[in-house]
Amino acid sequence: MSLASILVVDDRPSVCEFVASILGRYEVATSTSGSQAIKLIGSAAFDVIVTDVCMPGANGYEVLLAAKDRSLSTQVVLMTAYGTVSDAVAAMKQGAFDYIQKPFDPDDVLLAVAHALQATGSGACAGGQRNEAEAVEQTSQPRVAVTMPYRKMIDAARARASRDYLAAILREFGGNVTRTAERAGMERENLHRLLRRFGLRAEDFRHPRPS
Image (cartoon, rainbow, N blue to C red; front, side, top):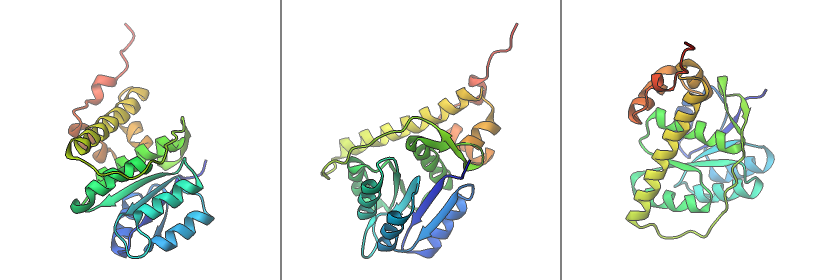
């Protein structure tokens, strides 16, 4: 099985390098230009694209639309500064899978990408390899203004989906933290931090011993 393919796009090379280092278990390509990224999308298949929102030339929304034009199964995660979070939330109505806010926690990057890979139909497993899962098709919709209640609803839904994703893997592996971390493409330490954040305990998912 081949490694899941990730494209990281940011006009600052240091950000590309940092995100690529976080996602070291996958096959990662980088681009420091939205226009260059769109050309790459046209010539190569990517499972997940992690792109900055604000870039000179082609921005993150144009990268998103190019990705969806090529393949609806490709999932796009936006990187956004605080001032553009509302735009990123609106982009989720255009087909973006998720967003991470700068400055970001590496755990959030790992979780967003692992969850996005599951939605592609080639979800992450040990070493970041592909694993068959049900494909999720997202429909592009016109961009709309984002109200605070809607943003809160999206944030709550994102947190719930992340928690459910981790719980599902824990359940699959009977609470085995090592195998769960491998499936999610992260180290045990990253997983433990995320479990604490979402109030999950591995022991609650362990299969009962036969009496």
